[in-house]
Length: 439
Image (cartoon, rainbow, N blue to C red):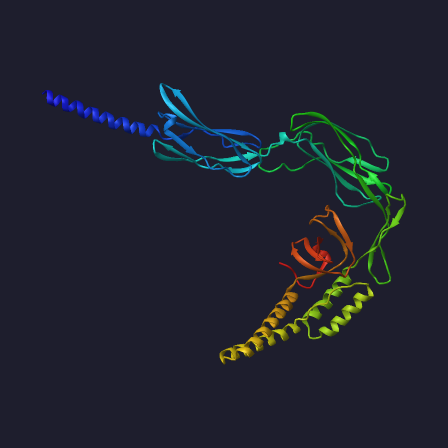
């Protein structure tokens, strides 16, 4: 009887030890407390990993270096007491410098010689408008202005929370009128990207005289996204206004448009601006001659006519490479290559080497000729070249009709072209007469 009771006691004790071991194993699993997964740039986030029923001396951990724009400020191991048990906490503190998406590195933890991996969350860091000062700017709808023309002026704002008041003086040298209601309250939704400029108000602006005219100075009382109330004075930038003459036709039949006089800031006198020849018919005629020069058997005649027309209109442009001439180096390359193969098989090494070199030269010449042939080109009808595919962009320069452009990129309304000595810019598609079109 006593022996049976003793056996039961040993059995219960063993079962208790096994259950305790299982409980300890489950209790020592590291758990990441509910972490934040988003913040603003320059914010600091703290992440806590809890290991229950375990002393700090039985825990070691390693944390890899985070990616760029993320700084680990500290990584500490702390002992805590909760509900009568001893727990270990690993506290990781990170700072985020810039907006973006960041993956925090996994934490490798060893608990009583058992390895564990704790996955860290992906953090979305928003752009913080509160760190920036208000920005206001005038934007004019055209890069140049002429007397009597009406242009749209936009007052754009960024990092502005509320506009309390807006005042401006009516300029004497221009008509100035507000054409839209003032947007005085701005809402910024959390975003990884910098907020776009918002049009606060639109105005019509009609200059009445030529010269250098200042846009109106505006005084605003506003609150910025940084929380500061301030008085903001937007100074009027200067705009050059030209006298516009009527369009006219010269004896060559080309339409010309002329900004007749420009204001000279240094001498305070007017100076003549060169005329820009704009002619769709001239561009079309030259494009047809260039097509004929490139693809027809009468390329010599077409080249002569094209050069005479360009000389008459003071145009200097590169000649087209006739497709017919591409056949000559191609045929010679094939012949030399066949001779090289024959000599190589006949084991006449010296002769084979000579024809190999000749074949290589002819191959390079053929490739260059082919490249010249397939390069997309167009003849310009004359006008303005812009920095961006938008008429509100800066005008790089004005070029006469008849000039040859290499087309780098083409959309429905705009083309990126190469001209001169490696200059690039955007022109309207309808101002080009294509010899070959780009993709």
